Length: 397
Ligand SMILES: Cc1cc2nc3c(=O)[nH]c(=O)nc-3n(C[C@H](O)[C@H](O)[C@H](O)COP(=O)(O)OP(=O)(O)OC[C@H]3O[C@@H](n4cnc5c(N)ncnc54)[C@H](O)[C@@H]3O)c2cc1C
Image (cartoon, rainbow, N blue to C red; front, side):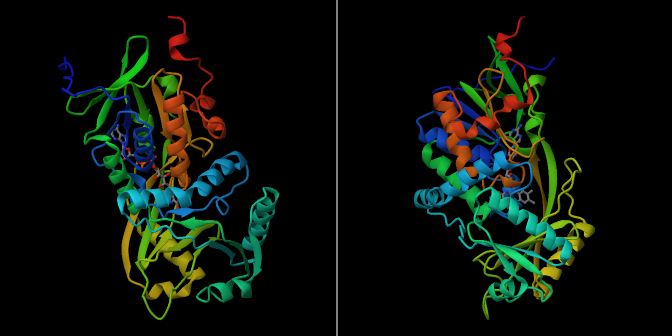
């Protein structure tokens, strides 16, 4: 029989314990602490996770997909918050986030791509979004390093970028400022107390961490915390993405002025130029479980497609190859707020838009934790949409 968990002598049981210190758990903890809640966070390596790999596009408009119009509203709400959010975080922590309001150009390389992009443009217009159709020549005037074969494109001045690694570091610092207590440990199991209420977690070394409420923000691992009743376990899965980092020369001028992206033979490829000189090339999308191997095929395809867009990249030093896991959900939208288990909330499933959705997630989760309810804009993202189960405490014994 395993020994009973021991409870550390803490001065006060926190109001909130966040499980997972990726950008989503961190922003939740920061905003909760700012609202006066005593907050703790458990993660062996806070500030790690998918943000260490992500490109950091803030692409509400160019990431619009058919059937994701509800998600669009949340993405736009978060994009609108970004300038103030980034300024607040930088002022508080002194960290430069690499927030760059540079816009995005989505281009087509052949007739099929152009037809696809025209459809996307029509969808954007129907959705009231700002984007402008450009001829191939106009695209190259904006971005002279583009391949001569570019057949047209969409100029989206409202889709920006941030450096997610810097964002994660700044959020760790902001949590520190706000008094969030970090437990550098792995949460092994959720504890459920009397009255079927989430009461905390037990860590890998057997320590019991108690809390008034628990927020599960474990990214792609959110569905794996033991002790979470089956009915409320988030249906989140890992979606692998491989990404390359190249270094651009400082002179004679920038290789690219803005994010450039395209669909090449059905594969999405983007090039995100940072002010630091880093050029991020991404990303594959693979359903391979928890595999994070960088493969020759993945690197080859990214370089091949990026080279078709911007031939000059083959001259650049390749400085990093890495794979990360997006927390995918069944409808590609996040799961935010209270679950059917009293005291357990979710902040997960942000899939390919977690960096973009960081500001709105922090606000929505702080509202849910202080007011008990999700604000209007987040109601469609309640975890309850995946289970018709009533609150577990309301179920007959
Ligand atoms: C290749 C790639 C490119 C991307 N590009 C973009 C982009 O351009 N724009 C954009 O908006 N988004 C992008 N994303 C998506 C974005 O990175 C993610 O949606 C976001 O980082 C998810 O953050 P998270 O905090 O929910 O999860 P994660 O980053 O996965 O963090 C989860 C954390 O929880 C911890 N954890 C899990 N379980 C436990 C446990 N039991 N106990 C303790 N700790 C636990 C883990 O250690 C980890 O630190 C990209 C992602 C990838 C992989």
